[in-house]
Image (cartoon, rainbow, N blue to C red; front, top):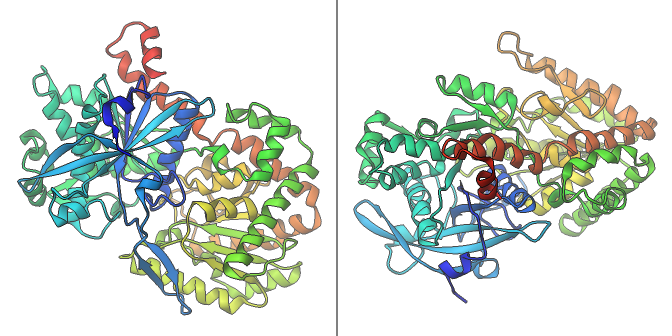
Length: 580
């Protein structure tokens, strides 16, 4: 049933910030996400709802999803449409705006998803839909696919998100003094719409800049969208001349956002350092990512936390009190999560794993710099490690972008390596990585593995999810792990902290990884379970209590959202009223 856009939005009050993201991973079967960016965006909304922060998410509706992954007997990834029904999750709203793309009016209608927090406070996420009969087939298809490998298509989508998103917020009644938070550069065209909106101001550029916040997530140059200026001028004829002149021959969406934002941040300390070298001349702050802990904690850990820390869902920092829980109970809760994961694997993949055997988990987007193949560099060493102790099991999951040939080759390599390791090592590559699979793996595995090539990790929140479930990490010192790693206390490092003047070689990293598995990690797991459980407990009380959205959201409010309004308001009380 369609609701009136303005009246239904009245239940959302004191909206002070609009959070723009190309994807939101709000529900497993709501295919509006591809990976980590969408997971972070959804967790941001959940954290804001818990803390009663007035925020509205803005995104694109994609009815055919990213893609559904299958892997054949040769390890080759195949993609097919991942259709879902928006009516099962969203409420269509009776509102409409339009944007001009290539001199045509593209009509956009909104859908609503409400994110409810622990106190019942709710924040809206608005999805923009171009799939209606008034639009051309090309324009309708902008609401079909996520991250299609076509510059014209993606540029059009980003006009809809940035320009259409600002107009839709106004159409729905969000007319207060909004801040506009761009989660990556996909929505950066919103600065052009804001320039038009504040065109009568004494200094439009300053007005826009004071309202914009930009978070960048990727230290890899290929991850920053770039379009030819000529194509942008053709597709976006109303682009303000001032912005067009600043582009040069290429429109870099990250630079567009950087140049028009008063607050810019990376998502971990090391990532911020890398971003500052990529984009010199910009003042880039650091707010390390966090996870929405209560969403990602498995049922058995949830029950354990609730038994000892009654208020943990209202303030994740209270997980520090888990330091007083017995190791025996930590081990029992993890054992239940592991058995739950193993039962699911047998039911869905016909893979029979042993809950008594040490299990390594690895799951993320498969692309060359993440080095999914690193663990399998020395097959004999892995077999030897498994034989020295009481066995070894390895679980992998992850998808490669359809256009990423090297990423697809890595999946084939891992698939072949896993077959070669059997029966010495039990292995499984789980198809079509999604939120459900992620939740089971980060709680059910015994060790979380992360092997990116430094300094190319942004943050890496899967390791945070593992930590919140008591699962230690073995990782290259990059992203959040530079901040969360304490050797033999919260997990283990691979190699040393990245230094461009003294880089660890791949061979040195391999030896460190295998050496720690063989001489430290597996002996500890099998021979000293009490000490292993202490490390699990440390993961929760030290890292779980800090690397979460409650801390992250507070940092955004104080450092970004709050600072913007204090430039205009002299007293603090109205500021707090607007934020809450």
